[in-house]
Image (cartoon, rainbow, N blue to C red; front, side, top):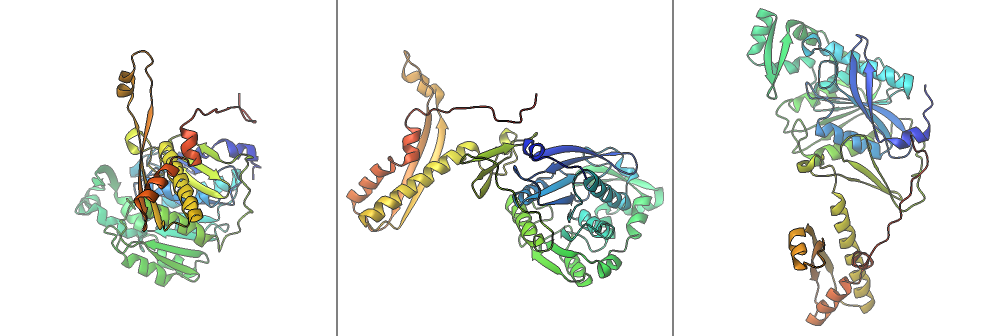
Length: 418
């Protein structure tokens, strides 16, 4: 195992990797790392059939796991996404082999994986691959079929043509894929039931009762065939691809909490900063991990400007700070005065009105930021008390900071690369 220095881990939250498989093809992979700490354990994420590693749900689950200290490799199977190879030359067996090759890469260069997570057909893949990986202690499947042959239904009427002609082009999620006869035969060669009845791994089965692609009955069959310890999580209201970000965040947090009971987790390192907050952004995208003491959150940009919308924007966080400070200040003041203030709601919005601001003064044009703040006070308060609370709201520390010049001193930290 390569000894990775903490400085190496600090430099990048997401690392881009090229992992050679047994057929000499490079698999495109991303390894998401926890912020400024050694991973407590390593995990592999196997994507759904034809999906790829960059499906938003899979990125979100991976990032949720990093908040609990996991390092997660998500990769494209050969012939999919950015990996080398032709899809028509692959099958379910080659996908299982890719999982094993990624696990071997992790064991050689980092640390052997303890957790496998698989989505849809990738879920069936990690079940079968885990049998050959002694280091793996826990497996989580999401919307997985109980039998790999279930995927045949995606081919519809083209199945007969594949059998007759040897191959056919099939549209899956609006994209064309060439499916050959050997793919169908290979699906039939795998016995998930036989693996489950003897599998000595902790198992979490995540499935939505409303899944229209892989029905909930598949989860029941997997659960009944598997040995204990086994758990089932009903993702009520979710769809097969976890299109709602909240669903993926929920799954990621549950997988992290559940698996911690069964894994050998290294001690978590504290955040390596002597300041109040630390923020880190990786090589690609705008998703930023922020830690403030023992608290962690994500920041991002909306999709309209190229982000993944996995967290509030920097200006959203600024407004949140102002709103929180306003509420706290009013709570303290009302408590000291013993006023019947039951609740404070602060609505905030930020705008830039540069053309209007520039037109206000031809001699000294200015570019100003405008923050709109609407206050709601709940409680049996007099008009005078409400007016006074409005005045006090302007005196909260963050409000005062924003209303006066701010000096920001910047310096370069250590471990700079040339």
